[in-house]
Amino acid sequence: MEQRLFSDILIKFFEKESWAEDFLSGKLYINQAGKFITEENCFRGDDCEGSQVVSFMNPILIQFTRIDNEETIKIPLPPQTPIKQSFVGAEKVPVLCASGFNSNNLIKLENNKYQLSSEYLKYMKQFGMYAVLFSRKELLDKIGKVLKEKCISAISGNVHYQEYDTSIKTFATVQEQYEQFFCKYISDDRDYYKQNEWRLILCDTALIDKDNDHIVIDIGALQYAVKANIENFAGAIMSFHEESEENS
Picture 1 (cartoon, rainbow, N blue to C red):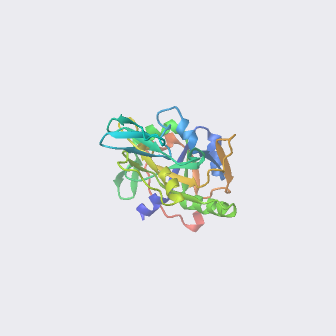
Picture 2 (picture 1 turned 180 degrees about the vertical axis):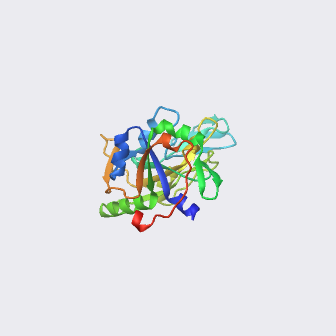
Picture 3 (picture 1 turned 90 degrees about the vertical axis):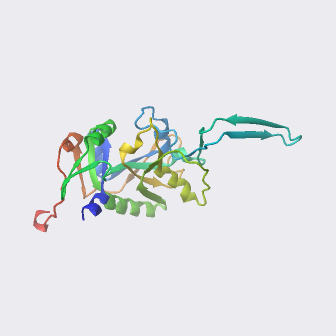
């Protein structure tokens, strides 16, 4: 039971309490991917956002060949040079971020008793001192109805963390291009894995116009959600209890 429940709990952090209250009321501010690309701080900014990055083990040779006389110019690049590719408009893709619970950020004390790791809490404080715990299922059910009415397709899932790729991907479908937003590349100076991130991706590059960096979608108030200060989680014990109807 615990594993299933953990898979449904998500947490989102906010810099302002009013933003957390907006989220509780169902007003979702969904940022464009470009906002994360241009973020200058080291914990959030990612110039590889939505892109595939390939780092070949052998030297890379870039060749320019003239069409008229086939004259060529060759430029060698050192091994393990990161080469980035993304699709047109990727920076305008709307991305909603949250954080999940699993063995990466939970410490099991005993049966049905857990604590959030202090390392995780320290890292996530950078995103804000206010948090909303909510049900992934309820959020997806509510926003799914709204997106269906607006004919907007979306995908969601946990972010996976990896080193640079060693071969170039061939995206067979448009959805595979959007699925690249579930990939975060890590290295000694890129510790994004500490975010334990979950994402909802709206598969449309035209939803956010050029004068804005986000879209607002109202899905109605969340019933299975609660607001808290991040300090409430320090040293707190997490457990599960079935709520009887008379206490609900």
